[in-house]
Structures are given as C-alpha cells and as structure tokens.
Length: 133
Image (cartoon, rainbow, N blue to C red; front, side):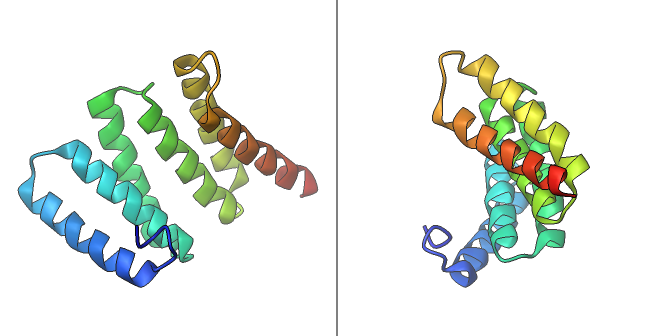
C-alpha cells in the first residue's frame, strides 16, 4: 500500500523488515519470492537499480522452481526485470525477457488478458527505444 501511494521510505522499511522475517523463517519460499519481488520494485521505483536486480533474480529463481517456468507469476517477474533493464538502457538483455513473458501470458491466457496488453506495450516501448539508438 505504501509503495502504491509513493511512500517509498515507509514501503522500503516495511518490506526490508518483512524480508528479514521471511528469510529467518525459511519456510515459505513463495512468500519470500513475493517480498523480494515487491522490494525490488520499490528499489526500482526509487532508481536503486543495483539493489533491485539481485532481488528480482532471486525471486524469479524461486518462482520458476516452485511454480514452474511457465507460470503467470514468473511472467510478472520477467516483465519487471525487463523494465529494470530497459530503464538502464540494457535493451538487449530486456528483449528476451519481454518475449518470454509474453509467450507465457499468451499460452496461459489464450483468450486475452490485461497483462498481455501491458506486457506488449512495455515490449513495444523497448522496440521503439532500440530503433532510436
């Protein structure tokens, strides 16, 4: 909630505290992956890309292991990691992540879904940026 209303300091404080709790518990890996993902997103929103990337990567690894490589939650993390790379100008690294994200979503939701539209818009933005280079 705090991140949603751009109260990044409070969101970061809460998420960092929750991450420590989840890591200490060592029980629910998916809960840990969700916190890592949300904290990475918070860091990214603040331009702290170096802190965000390893959290996205760990979250992705846990989700792939726990949910399978074709799960929509994996797609969400792929999209956000791609967005991080795009923000840094790391376009070639972002491209296959968007493509994989969209493939997962189109397979999972063959009749369409708002996340497909959002992911496609993000990917189209990347392609525009790449063409401008």
